[in-house]
Each structure stands twice: as C-alpha cells, then as structure tokens.
Length: 465
Image (cartoon, rainbow, N blue to C red; front, side, top):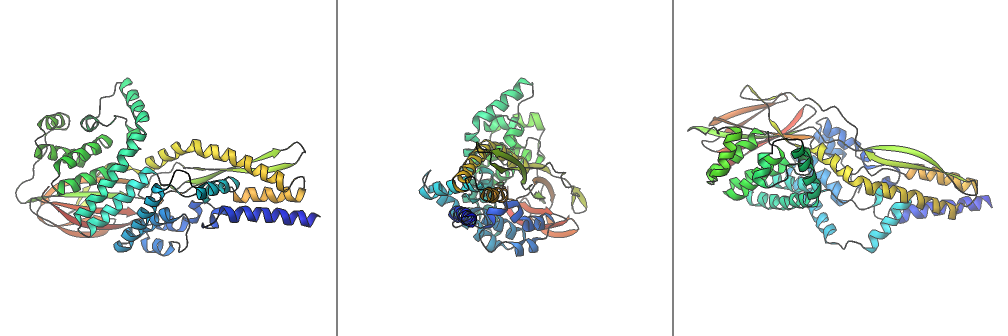
C-alpha cells in the first residue's frame, strides 16, 4: 500500500512537471535564470567576450526572445556583427509574434496553470519596455556598423514608439513625481519644458533611455531631419539635463533649425555654444561601462498545517537586486588628454524600476502558488507521511524565483563631445589604442563598450552635423 501511494505521488509530480514544461528547458524547474546564465554573465563582466560567446547555450533556456537578446549582445561585443544582427532579428520576430497573439490563449492559460504548480520560470518571457528599447538600439548600431543609415533610422523610429508607449503607460506616476519636485521648490528642467516631458527627475530616468534618445537624435541629424533630431535631443536633455554632449547637440540643432526662442532659453541656462572652426571636426564618444546587475534569489520556507495535523513546507522565492558597489573605471584619453563623459543612462535604475512595477503581480502569483501546491498535496498525498515528505522536497526544489532579464546590457552609458583638428587621432581605453580619422567640419562617432579591463571600439563618420 505504501509503495503504491509513493508511486502515485511520484507520478503526479512527474505529470505536473511534464505538463508545465512543454517546450521549455527542464533547468527552469530546479534553477533560476541568473544561475543558468552565470557563466555568460561573469565572462562579460570580466571582459572575456570570446569566452562568453563560447558559453552561450545551444539549447533553449529562456525562449527565443531572451536567449537571442543575450546572444545578440554578446556577439556584438565580440565583434561578430552579422551573427549579432541575426540573433537580434530572431528576438524581434519572436516579439512581434508575441504581441500579435490574443491577450489570452489556450496554450498560455495551460502554461499559467502549470506555473502555479511549479514556478514562474516556465511561463513565456515578456520583455520589458526598456529591453525592447535596447533591442532596437542594438539593431540600429548593427546597421550603423554596416554603414546603413536608413536601416538604423527604421530601428530608432521603432524604438521611439516603445519609449513613447512606456511614457504614456506611466504618465500618472511621472506627473505625481513632477508635482513632488515642484512642491520642494526645485527649478524646472529645461529639457522637460522644451520636449513637453514631465519634469520627474530620477523617475523619468528610470522610464526613458537617454542613450537611445541621444543616438536617435544623432541619426536624425545625420539624415538632415532637424525636426526629428530636435525632438529627440530635447527628450534626451529632459532625462540627462547635465550632459554636456546633449546640451551641445540641442543648441546646435536649435540654431540650425532657426528655433531662436528655444536657443535663447538654452543660452540663458547653459551659456553660448562654441562653434567649429575651419580645419576642425567633431568627435562624439558613446561609452558603455560594465554590466547591468542580475537579479538574485530571496528564499523563505514556511510550514503550513491542515486540520488533520499534516505539515507541508512551502518555499517562497522572490527575485531581488542586491545593492552593489559600482566598478570604477579609469578615464579614457584622447591624444594624451583625459576625457570624462557625462551619464546618459543608468540601466540598473531602469531594471530596478521594472522589478518594482512587477512586484505586486509576483507576490499575487506567489500566494496563489502556495494555495495551488497545497491543494495538489492534499488531493494526492492525503494523510500519507511519505507522500507529504515527497511534496515538501518537491516544493523546495521547484520553487525558483523568476530572475529573467537581459543581463548582458551595460551598467551605465556616458557620452562626450569635443572639437579637434581634422586628421588622425588616437583614443586609449584601458591600455588599448584605437586610431581613427576626423574629417574637416564633420562629425565622427566613436563607440566604446568597457567591461573588466577590456573594451570593444569602433568608429563611423556621421557627416556634416
């Protein structure tokens, strides 16, 4: 009799796992994403791009969207640009399929039921707005890499749609933060005034990506779309009001486009803009630093008693971010002179904001899962001590937090802009020399990504900005 009950309990547990995990990695049952992605993550953090590429999983871990996010980013850092573009395009295709589906489908409902019996890692991954913004940003950078300005512009237009949707969905919170700042007597952010964005301080920075907005402005300006460039530069200024490269860009386009009233306001706050002399060119440096934090697990075991005196142990697992000391980076140098950029975006801030927004639904599903597992235990193990013990072990092993996120994104991104004489120039990053040409009266974009004492560097000519 005892063997039969144990057998029935094992069969029930196995049936739950097989039903819940159809089409997904079995690793999601007994470990969470940060654990499964640890080798890739640590390799990127150390600047070992080839090791990270070699460690990319061959099998599905988190689905087509997130797996290809990571693959596209790793291969971009490893300068495997065609492979990077292909992987990101697969993510983009999977996102479109996901967004075209009905809000509720039979397969999704079945997966959701399975998740209540196991953990949220077996559900389909739905990317955050900030991750979708970075998807289009890196697709855009891939197009820039192959000198395809039109392709890059398509991606920044799509990214702008994501940015605008994110802003609109959080409009109430942003307006509330704006009111709070006004009540404290803080002066209004001129970028917010010019772009009609809420002056919401760090709240706005957690929703809008200054890196994306500034790059978008550069590309619009390169295509001579001064209106598009002005809109995105002012939005970038709302997010990064102290970024000198953004200030220079807004003032430059305001002057070129004849926006004299806006230019007067900018000059009153920031002073007059320096002008490019004959024989000079402009350098714009985009500098990525480090790797965004990965979510970790927080676990708590709780005993649950029923009316018959049976005890079940339920493990509660939640994702969280651990405050980390930000890595220090030495200043880059240009022709022997140190250059320090100003921050465009703090990706950690965006990731933490997303987790904060998701937490109420995470907690609700956690509560529902405890109830669902207890019902399964009562209906299967009943008052069998061995069966209850098996369920206790099962609950502990399978309760894993949902730590899925795009973990190879940078930690922060800075920008720097300056005039230099036309000709050859050398930038030194972490002991690595990179020489490039600057043309008379034209703008050269230098892209740098730094992790663990290593860096990927390339440059492109953007033309007469």
